[in-house]
Image 1 (cartoon, rainbow, N blue to C red):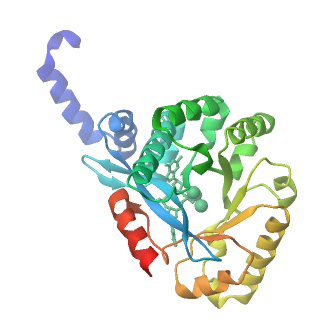
Image 2: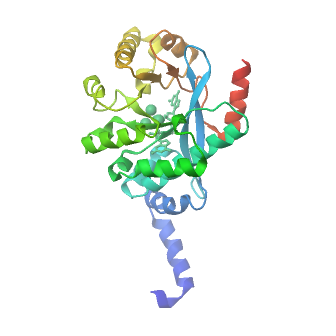
Image 3: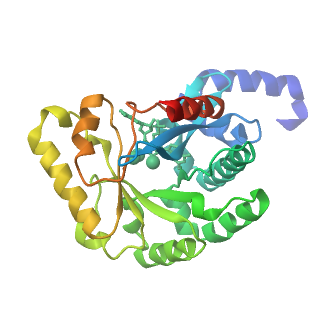
Length: 279
Ligand code: C2E
Ligand code: CA
Ligand code: CA
Ligand code: CA
């Protein structure tokens, strides 16, 4: 087919595009998305419950696809995991979050802890500690300000290898957080043996908590247990003032959710911080 020239290729491409499923369009698009600068990080603040101060920020990836528009991570991260692209994306996210963090510090902001989400697949490859060290060297990031958010699922396969790698990561100074806690496999009993610093209670626990006394007792009990294991507890999915009133009384350190702020582009995040500081 090669000998038939470029016009034939163009025809072929057009036809292809028409018939390609969206999934394939996304999968193909992923390969060039980093190079084309189509990814962006948005930043969602976390608040310390005792002081009301902004205590950190979570970086969440967004993909601005040239034809399909804004694609949320739930639609392309799983695809990136199965198509072998996730390691590259995770690396981009870590680098970008560290780079942005340094910019903020240079602009005179208080050093702000930043959390990034890391796919389980990445842990199986074993190169994360080295990668993060080189990103830190490159960007000047203080790794004590970095938290990696992982989900319980990563411990199912290669448990020992994952634990060893988490230990190596923590020895670099960064923190490890279990995301979406309570939805997956790990029991509280298992948790005490894992090298983690923080647990994020899944937002399904928070849904409707203000109108459900049973639910708030469950969350309270879990939070207390986690605390007794010396784990830092973050509650996510706080959507309303009423939700916040409920969790304020529980033994949790930080809150995150639409009530405080939606994830924001870097520029808007700065304005949010300034406004919040004045309140
Ligand atoms: P997650 O890490 O559990 O992130 C929280 C998700 O809940 C985010 O959705 C956030 O926008 C949303 N959220 C925050 N506050 C509230 C709230 O009060 N109510 C409700 N209903 N939702 C809230 P988002 O950004 O669409 O991310 C979805 C998931 O995609 C994330 O869940 C995470 O698992 C994954 N993800 C996001 N960014 C990255 C990334 O950079 N790398 C990897 N590997 N995964 C990512
Ligand atoms: Ca997360
Ligand atoms: Ca979560
Ligand atoms: Ca999630």
